[in-house]
Image (cartoon, rainbow, N blue to C red):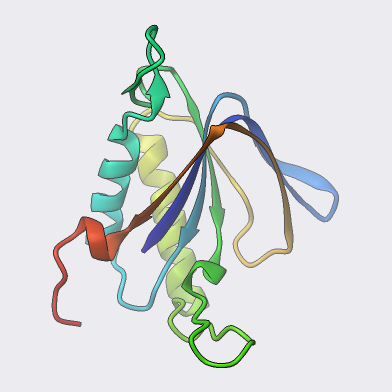
Length: 154
């Protein structure tokens, strides 16, 4: 599982000309899911995501979590995070999770973030989405479950 996390002043996602998710100050999170991911992996990634101290305190140091700043989440599915560009010029997406399983885990991520008391706006799985954001910093982080969780036999 991969999360590309952007600290934003605001962000929104549009599907077919209609805004389906919109936040103010918070985190825009692009979520990539692989075939080997599961709820246990998602739980560990969500724990890390919600505890990251990447917001500025009164001294301008990144010491505050999203909870500390009363921030919001915009969660966007993005299978292209599993693009394999090693051969040729056209990316392969064979490592990306199969749609039914990936959608289930994507919905799980959204619901678990909401269960923790956060606003968890989101896009529409599999849709052609237009994402607008005002990156704060800019500040962008990649969380990869293979680095967050000890590698296990697959």
